[in-house]
Image (cartoon, rainbow, N blue to C red):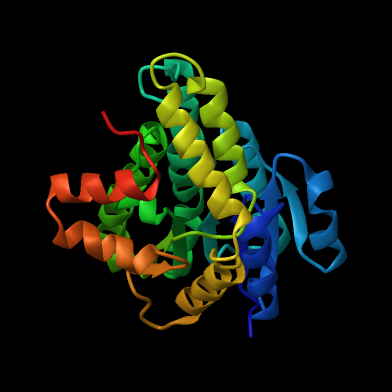
Length: 277
């Protein structure tokens, strides 16, 4: 039997690292991508193939796909995991930073899909897994650019799924809830740098405190729950279109569908400890 090949971006830590290990355990030849391959040493020591890739650099992405095809002749799974949270009041976040948030979280993922699809079409098979977030269905204050990217990736995934299904290719969305990674602490630092002073300082303090509380608490789910969901999706004959997994994902997404905008606003404001007028 031909060994299937998978590419996982953002593989240097957290969800990406756990996913690379999971897919390797399932028998895939796995390429773990990151901007700095020195951060992939532990994965490489365990047999995951490191590949240098910057999802904001087209030549880097093209080179990575070319390397995979040259070495294995195929690509069966693309896991678009690379991303970060650019938090801050919309008034405060510079437009260049907003563009970068979309470059990393959206355009990089879609460009890799474009590069992988010709090979998947030739095989008449393949799975593209886009890691969005419960933040692609709900919203929080001072997270506008981040949520914008995740909402966009949800919509793009839906359109892509319809386009490639007749070609034998699946598109799956993974919507993580609270996951025990470094993401929350980084987002908290970002919101303080961006909006820690000025008109939005009280909100920034509350949001940063909430992000750090979640990051330092023990309620968040381990990255393995996301890796397991991805493993299940890419080995299923008919994967679900969406997997909402991890702390808070299903209840919050359900609440968004049930509550009015104003009631959901109040729920989220209370949850993050927003100051009142």
